Amino acid sequence: NYRESEAGDFDRAVEITQAAQPVERYVAVVEESDLRCMPLSAALLKEPADPDFDRNNCASLHAGEWLRVLATHELDGTRWDYVHAGHSVGWLRDAKLTPSLPLEEARKLRDGPSYAVRRDETRTSGGHSFRMGVSLPREGAGVLVPTLEGFVPDTLVDAQADADEPTTRRSLWAAAFSELDSPYGWGGRAGERDCSRLLRDVFVPSGVQLARHSAVQAKVGSQVIDVSQLDEVAKRARIEEAAAQGAVLLYMPGHIMLYLGEDGPQQYAISSISEYLTPCEGGPDTVNRIDRVAVTTLALGRDTKKRAFIERITTLVVFGA
Image 1 (cartoon, rainbow, N blue to C red):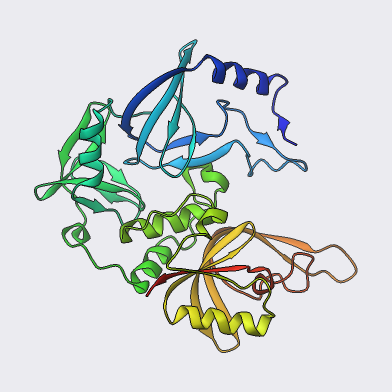
Image 2 (cartoon, rainbow, N blue to C red):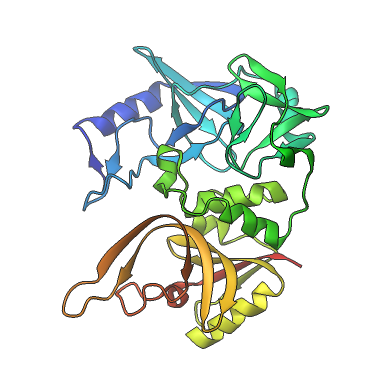
């Protein structure tokens, strides 16, 4: 059950949904935008209420992401657009978008030669900034950037923009580590990344379009390995076997991580993580908030009601040979 911020929030969202008029538009995001599950600005919270976990947050869309607008509604100066972002569907409120493009032109820009942004704060000489996880159409030696007036020519400032480095396991790790200590944001709160958005953005430069949510990400790879019935020793060994074949994602219900390797008795992964538990003698487990991208051991959470990460991991997703 979800708690309304104000009485009638659900009813207002239903009214907007029913009143929205079907459209067919192809646009790109100009500024980071919150994608809402319902056409409602207010939060939807589960009890016990935690304002950091707004269940109405579907995702945060980066500048440069492509959208198909399916319906729209405007009332009292507020415009709600129902959109398909490829990885998610939801509602945008007064979002800054490019003018609509004909389908074939949009496809040409989206699917043609492009520059994949590998680091946040990738800047252009025109003063635009882009985040890891988007691709910009190329034009000559430069790129085309989305603006309120349409796509305009620009050039990338960063030296790395001049070369397309090959995608390797090391380059995936480098992309993930570039976000080390960046704030955690469930559902893309305030433009921040949760576990699945971090991995989606890390993989985009490789040409792999992961889903937006961890449970779906756990279903697609060159190999998907069920380890839910293995004991801890066998599971550790299976993770190492998988890591010898390529990059490995470790999935446990509610969380997904990029495996890094082992050092002595410990295995490590990097992820955007909110919290973990530690046991407390004589009392309930202690909740420890991390709220950032961090490197953790797979022993985290041992001897608590949730169990250690290594015990909770159910699926390995391998990208490689």
